[in-house]
Length: 76
Image (cartoon, rainbow, N blue to C red; front, top):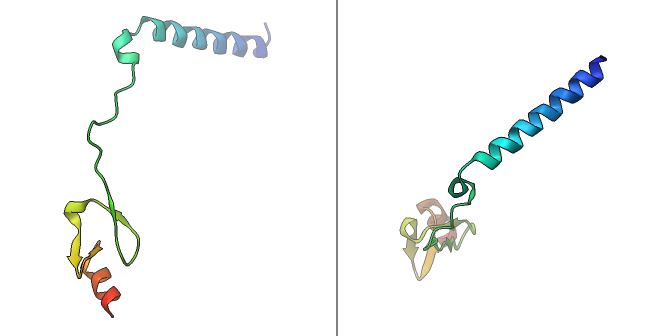
């Protein structure tokens, strides 16, 4: 038997093993998890346009900033 045939049989055997293992896995573990129900809405920094969660923002003069550095750079 040539080396090529041996390698081919090993690859086919491995693929068959993976397929049987997939079929024997419980149906519930094959399903994907649903996305979170309340995704976090992000806001954009006025200076650098970075998206950040609202609870991490710095607000000044009706503008939203991601950091004190951006707030200072925007005011100068």
